[in-house]
Image (cartoon, rainbow, N blue to C red; front, side):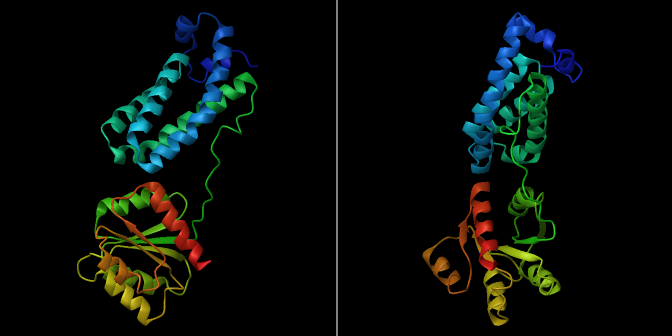
Amino acid sequence: MKDVSFLTSNGVNVEKSLELFGDMQTYNDTLEDFLKGMEESLPKIKMFKEEGDMANYAILVHSLKSDSKYFGFTKLAELALQHEMQSKANDIDFIYLNYDELMNETNRIIKLVSEYLGKDASNILPKEETVIKDKTILVVDDSNIVTSFVDKIFSSTYNVLLAKDGMEALTIVSNHINDGKIVAMLLDLNMPNVDGFQVLEWFKQYNLFKRIPISIITGEYSKEVVDRAFTYDIVDMLAKPFNEKNVKAVIEKTIDYRA
């Protein structure tokens, strides 16, 4: 175990924490409980974020805030409080935009505490996602909310190209069809200028479905629309509104289709 100065020099307010814990032995023993709790709660925080379950997300970040405050992790407590308040307000955009900052500070504290206690943090810290920046996902939707949502999810691992209508999408496809970099397309059906069905017809005419697999994202999920969409060689359909977990599953399925 390292000297307590290792914590204080890295921004931990141990002196304030001892007002609660009383002595260093109790503080250190409880820090071990904190690490065990993180091993259980971090996967759940990620899961609730991906599912858009803001109620349960708020409960867990509230707990993270309280623990951080007790242990003197001032910055982490402040970040967790922001996430608690915004998740209670159902501000999913805030959560997605600021999630990495929260997790980076959480992981910093876990590494810090583990090193201080002489523990191995590898079983607690999340595994890094594989970055495949030479591959591209094309998202075609006239909604800025949808395109920015998908971009936030995948931009750290894939190149993400965004098209506002079918015409823009066909231009992008024409420019990249021979380089093989577009591994999946998410296509809205109801768009101005050139709609999704016109894009599907163009893909059918030039036999492109095997080269760039397509899944549909749509707010119109009637039997007529579904039946018509599946007359084309699409991979899957996803109804709006959707969450991160849904989108990831469809993207993985669409990419695997070509493989």
